Image (tube, rainbow, N blue to C red; front, side, top):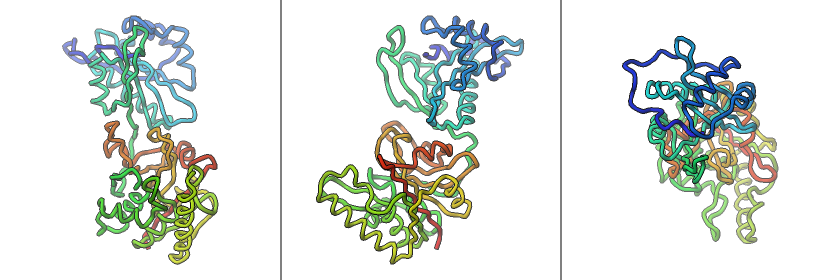
Length: 381
């Protein structure tokens, strides 16, 4: 459903109304249908559908009511099972109350409800010609991530927006650094840990490339290479940190998609050398995945943890990716993701200290068909 085109039009009333937002109940069905009828000419939600949505565990309906109990707006969220995402399916405010702050209040409550259900992304679609709705979303921190042609029943186009939810996110003393290349996520995680444990340490692009050179598995023929957990741990140890490796299996890693036999051979040799260096640096290797409980215990002991994830759940790309886990609030792990998606207008605030629910983190902390799980626990020496 689209957002009403006059959601944030000029204020029509001399003073803002007194209203409250709350979860919808069965007694609100008449009011919801009345709002739907007043707000939309097409694509209306039927009374029977509202009844099912109010009761459905995969949906949440929030209403705004005046002091006399009359409903003047609603917002409908949908939750996709097994993901960290919620979707704003519909939002509406009666025409005579638009521009009075009700739309913004419904959005704020929807974000709170989504975060309380362990969703860290909220997405929505809005008509391309709905300038007032677009202004509202952008003012609230939503960024445009897509465009859909012929999306609505009247053939209007839609824009898709997204926001990363934070709730009452705890602060962190770990300084954030954005990677400046496509292949230095792991070294940037090492660098952020160094910047935290060594206060005299200066983070920057030269250090980023130096750490990558110390930790990379290979760079030849088919492009610049990434880093395995052994290389990252050795790089951290070379620069004064204590490191421990947790990996789900022995042997060389990240080879399942490497078809060139020469590149495969060089990667195997590079990783073998790193494994030998872990002995020289007395870096323990545990061939058992580090689960959320173990990560929380490491954080409680003052460590930071670099974890391999699939980037698909973070930004829709099926590539291995390293993030730095910097905090825990009892429901979420907080990560510094060194990748900032500039093409989607992300900023550091989208990638730093990002809360991820435990269950979602468990799902994303693996890579490939095996799946491979790997982590590097870092402490001051």
